[in-house]
Image (cartoon, rainbow, N blue to C red; front, side, top):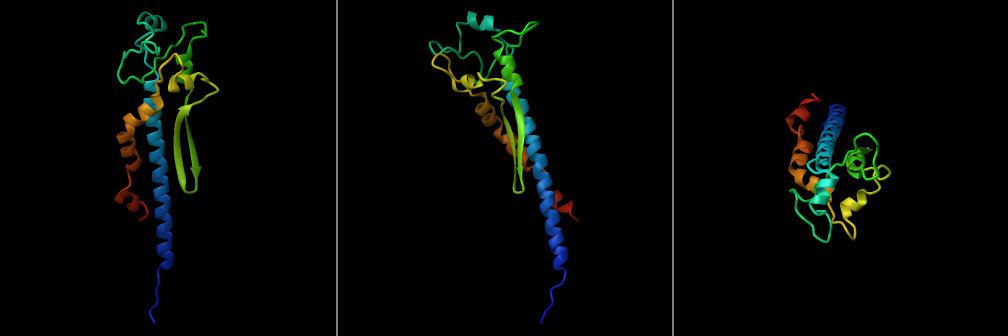
Length: 167
């Protein structure tokens, strides 16, 4: 009869490998989520036109005569106020309402970039449009535009170096 030895050592190495993979995954998800957050902020932070200039352009986001004033068309202008807060300062509140969150379980970590609805209740009208305004889904647009970069960030570090960390 043969005797197998070293099983305890193999189990410890597997546990260490699982921990190393989990730590690398958390690091990668955090890095990718931060990247996406920055890019979504850029997509919702255009400052090349003021509300007055958009009106002079004939309200380019109106359904009656939509105009492509930038590319991609889903980009959003940030309308920050100077001094006293204005009622129509929606772009500034939208920009500030872009948040990141993480959901962790023993088997999964998820990074989330989205809009805090309490801070920007009008965001749904920008993303989905209204009967008078075209939709500009800058969340999906940015995600789609960044998918290759996000995939690269998510797999970074999963190579021999992960195995090397456990000895």
